[in-house]
Length: 110
Length: 112
Image (cartoon, rainbow over all chains, first blue to last red; front, side, top):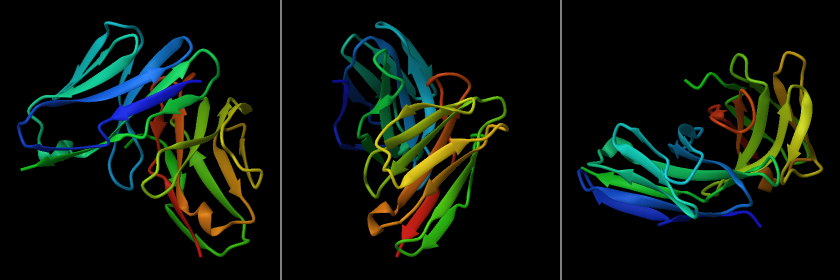
């Protein structure tokens, strides 16, 4: 069964303190892994798509990496405005549904 | 602004009633998806339409139905509403498949 697990559930960092969020997945034939950011009461905002192991993508203070079993979202020198819930989702070749993780709630304190 | 428009933004209704949520996808996007997100819960996939046809079904209740019209806008119909249906309902669209789906700001449904 396709599954996505994100850890930790919540992460509190000081401004400037770099860290990583984890997304572990089990899927039959990975078609793509997606990272989104969601602010409270808002719709998820697309960040990255990764398609194959070894792929990396960057955007401002965020960098996403992918292996055959997991993806990491590295955040470098975060700012309070990076506070949000970060969601990971995967698409496999068994069906058309995206499988979503429960998210990591990131809080950056000034 | 993602380019996906959902109306209404807020909806308060009584148990047993029926409501319709509307979604206009980004220009040119053929796929529309509906999600439900309850308070502090993850995204629950409901249903996907591609160019007017149902493509995938998730955990959608029989009391719920959706359709995509020729102009590609979509409607989600929720009937016989229960208190537990109170949630944020999101619509997302993408050009093809699942890559880079863009979400609307959601409709917050409150059933009283």
